[in-house]
Amino acid sequence: MLYSVSGRLLRKLQTAQNAAARVVTRSRKFDHVTPVLNELHWLPMVQRVQFKLALIVFKCLHGLAPSYLTDDCVLV
Image 1 (cartoon, rainbow, N blue to C red):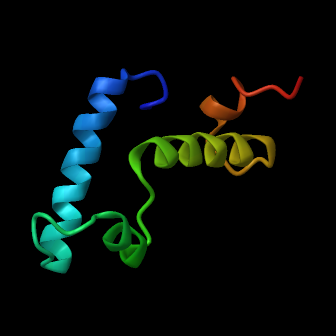
Image 2 (cartoon, helix red, strand yellow):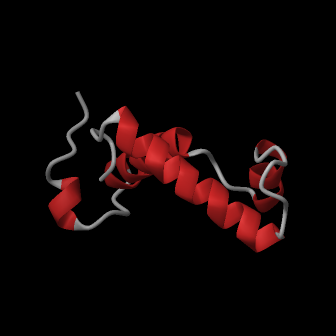
């Protein structure tokens, strides 16, 4: 889970994601990457981590996750 990683590591992951998006779409190095990420329907890394965490919690609360996760996720 990438929820508690440092901002430095998230920036490195974002750089890797940007490079991968440029390779996939064959865009140039100095083109803006945001439209490229939107075209691929890829979230930036910070938003992706938040989305994945929210999805896991949703699945736990609705009984769609494995039991080892569901047991630890309690509605307060």
